[in-house]
Image 1 (tube, rainbow, N blue to C red):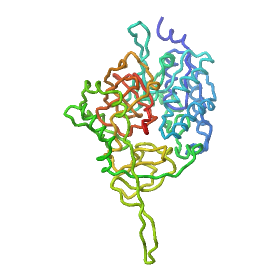
Image 2: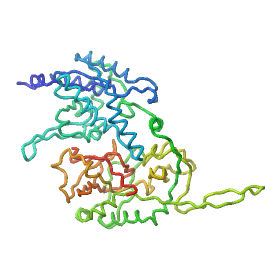
Image 3: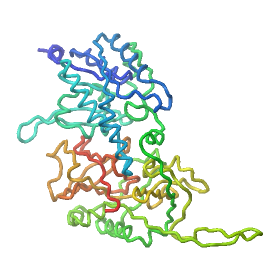
Image 4: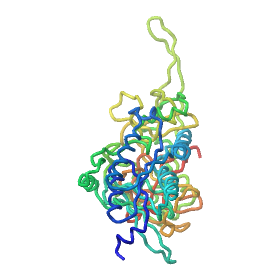
Length: 471
């Protein structure tokens, strides 16, 4: 039996979004002989949220239906907006309210595309679902003879979307197909043009998964009340006397060859990073010998406790009495913000801060005191951290057979945000969580974001970065 005949027995539902990637995925599956049908899912219907202010999903649905007709496959529509709001949007609001930064795209894939959508597809007789993600799936066999599914990076390094799928389970992967993961984006568009698909030259979607391009603060203000707080700039002098920063520096130096840790990351700009730096050479034996208590503290960010005293003075010819803050060598209040839940670590835009030679970045937020701390310059000490923790109950083990045993360490590549070059790190498994210690200090390690561990291009595990503030 040839492959085409074999494929004809498999019914596949393609999540057709109206974009070129899912369109070509459907076309390739049809050409490979699968029994293919398409389903378009509406996950958001609030036109007031998007920057465009119109119903983009209606245009997307029209394009998707035209593509299905051109390919010659059945087309269905499903409204999953209530499920999406409950599982993704409400989660977003909850995380932002706590001062964390969630990744809705990761949740959308885990909770919607490969759960709610998969269930709906199976109700229509599908054996598998397919998407236009730039990633690859392979199968292997473990030591017990069981089939194991591998989630691999896409071939196109500029479009790889494996990070967004880092929370999928073995069961979800077993029912998933990624038909374009081996192709470059340029090849996908060329295939679409040759097939005369309506989506061939359609621009890639931007913004939050299924919501589109939004003004995030405006979106969040739908449920989160603004609350004015202080915007405090932290000076370099603060770190010379901060006990936590001294601890971080000394501990990292103790596990680094030569005794000098790399505490500050290097990059070109906030949206164009250098390839993964070799960083310092860490000594695995010394990392393995660190106590649980030391690792817990190593994963905590610097604590900011800068107080400002006031003084009175007389101003003008009438000597009017006024109050001002005394100068503080560790920082200064430079303005106000609308609520720390609207800001994230590493953010540069939207601060309304001027009068600095270099860009100003958010280095920390304090959701309890409602304070946003900022620092000037790409090399500000507050932007970089070397260690993060994933709480034990949050560790998603896609390949548990390739994770370090409890109490041991292993070498991985790690990604803490989409499109970030893979970073070299050691992972330490302890009862209190999975600790990741990077060779090169990382910029913007943010609570709530997902850290994904890779081994030879395959995702092994992932989990949200634990919030260690005020611990």
